[in-house]
Image (cartoon, rainbow, N blue to C red; front, side):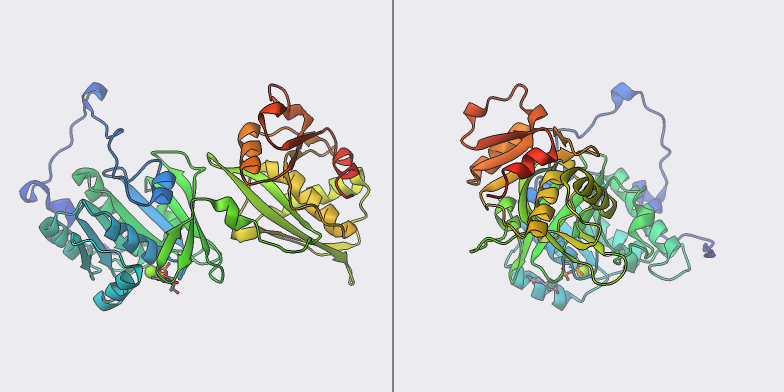
Amino acid sequence: MEEVVTKSEPEKGDWKFTDSGGVKKAVKPKNLNEITTHERYRIVTDDNELNRVLGGGIVPGSLVLIGGEPGIGKSTLMLQIALSLKEYTVLYVSGEESEQQIKMRAERIEYNNDRCYILTETATNNIFRQIELTEPDVVIIDSIQTLISPLIESGAGSVSQVKECAAELMKFAKESDVPVIMIGHITKDGSIAGPKILEHMVDTVLQFEGDRQMTYRILRTTKNRFGSTSELGIYEMLGSGLRQVTNPSEILISQREDQLSGISIASMMEGNRPLLIETQSLVSTANYGTPQRSSNGFDLRRLQMLLAVLEKRGGFRLGTQDVFLNIAGGLKVEDPAIDLAICASIASSYEDLPILPSVAFAAEVGLGGEVRAVSRIEQRISEAEKLGFKKIYVSKFNLKGLDPSLFNIEIIPNGKLEDVFQNLFN
Ligand code: TYD
Ligand code: MG
């Protein structure tokens, strides 16, 4: 356990003691009818991906945490946002980098905003003093782990420091109506003090993820008091900063010349957005002992269940095979509509027979090998059609109320897994 040492007297300059001339105003209860909301007003940024994950823009007075592994591009994203908010005064507080480093990054990004101020400071009382002087419309903190509150004696990044600094920022945001966006580092196992303990304190938690080796980055909402949590933003990291990817399907399907076995395309929903995504499987004879099962971007236990279904209902002898599954683009998929595509890619690799690249899938697979209906089938089919797919395999239970003649893509209804495999490879 960490010992929390509180200093006797908070110093002047702390947010807590600066409002209304040094005297803390007492908060009185209000009738619900007297309380006005900012529901209609949001700071809409130039970045549509960010607007979407926030539920339509930055909410005044909100405290947003953006977490991610070091080097993923959090500072780049936030500086880009700061520089694109041209009509607003933005204070970018960095405890990580020097002014010169930030300037160099800004030059790479090639954005400019003459109302964006950079402050390299870590003590919260000094930060609040500068906030009073600059009167920003938006405050960005890079990162919460570098801040220190003079009220707490333990070092920067410790649980008590991180909590106290976040609490001060929260109080500031709520009382001033200025939104605060905090960057927080997490390691691969998510263990380090910081974002995890902050999640319940903040209004919105965004997760910036992706493979550092790959260029695509995904911004995901994991908590949002002002919008849906199923939204997703996609970026590409270029030499000149992060580019918004407006048509994600194009990047999530690899361009391939010849047909390979083990590849299939699923028509998915990420939030309100349809997305076509490639699943890749490799099935090969296991040489030693227990066969390996490995999954990237898809729940391993669900993969094991699908393998058991394929074995029992599809007649595939997978018990002696290693199975590797990969979802393209570093995406993590939870939409069950990907099940059928995964089964198809495994079958394709097992048989070593490719699936035509013009074929897509959108259905859940049940324990009995039944092909189950999924939500928003029209949107999934339309997206596949829009991207030039010729056939889509769906559940026959999804056909109710659906008029196939409205689509310029062949819709193939299936009741069981066996039906799918009967005419897939030929
Ligand atoms: P950074 O934003 O510093 O990551 P974080 O704040 O999450 O630790 O950037 C991470 C990487 O991105 C860094 O290795 C350099 C690279 N990068 C680009 O590829 N293009 C760019 O325009 C910028 C600014 C950075
Ligand atoms: Mg950084």
